[in-house]
Length: 545
Image (cartoon, rainbow, N blue to C red; front, side):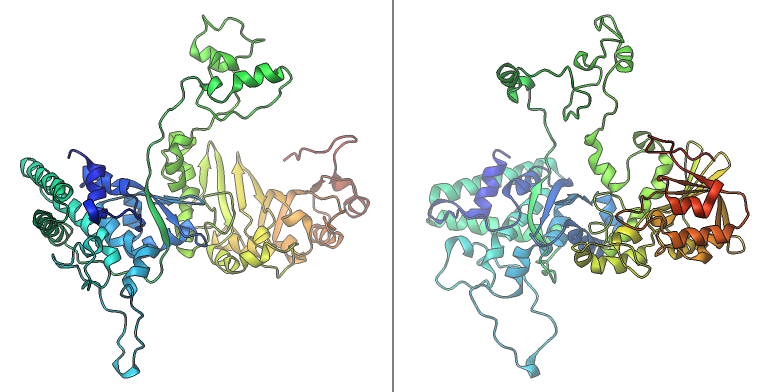
């Protein structure tokens, strides 16, 4: 095709004195141009939600309409602002366009007319189904007849462009397809040449025939019905990022800044550099370890590089989907936890809980421990049902100052990740800020309790040892050789004296030790020689198990 963008523009807006200039649809013209050039391909798209909605609202509805398997096949992922996906023309027309606010608004009632009040006796469920326009109606939005007969003229441009693309893409015979493209170019040229003449009307009618053929024979669809709610504001192409810099220092005015402000980096200790420069670049070389970079191999320069860690964001989409191969993530078995993200997607809690850490980690039915270089991790909390309840109060709760309470629905505390870590025969139960009853429930669900009890080598006390998160019975059911607790008893009364007495009473004369980050008088009184605290002038202490 000679001019895909020109073709799209003419089909959408007309030509000559009937030319329209308003972009009133949600699909940008370059999206249609891409489908016009590749009608059989999946095109990478960006779906933008309306201002008060979230990308997850779109994804959830897509899953309901298309199914999880289809969404996975179309690589549907999202971040905090946009949905990314790869869609065929038929998917776009049948499943995504009906989700746009534009289509919902125009499709639910005839334009320019107030919907008449319905009499109860004559009412029927649902609204009248949308139907494709006839050949005579196809260009009414462009030629603007005195009495238009198509009730939804705002949809006509969409009908035309989708039908034309489907018509051209519906022929597998390359020679015939090329001939059809040439015919279309000729008819479009006639529209520009003839303006209001008879030949222009003939060209419009010919294109209208192709449009209807595309819908009925290629797409095998009628005009789709609008969804119940308009979720999508705009649909754009997701273009590949291209390198655009050849003189990066001059481009960012780095040379001018260095000369004007006499900038030096001699005293710089840490820096985060957002760039595509390789860690082996001479600028990052540790000169004290290697002076001559010219004769050094890339591996030697890497070993002596001052760059401590690099992050590759070209794999961002795969990271969001949780499908990145194991050698990119470090360990393939991490996918055990990443795949736990699938169920909460359907519950609407991905964007509203555990932000900004994604994907959401939670207990998955019949999940197995994730094993990483000999380290075994079993997720015990949180559960998706708890998070679904918390989600409903999230907006209200996060505006308040929340501290732990036994019946508190604080998403900050109750969405804590609880993990049983096992390595080299040792077990550590890491409870975060979770409540003790939730921890016990997680242990029961994963069948880790024996006779309703568990003994570990190390227990990190829930929520800094708050009495609101544990009971005396908790310390009887979960025991350890080493207990770890942090807190200074200043802003909050943690570790709480009552909770510490519960622990001491539960263990009695059993051998155990308690590590605390602060030397508190009441802790010494309760635990005596079992207490371990940082040495003088130290701010931390290493627990030995």
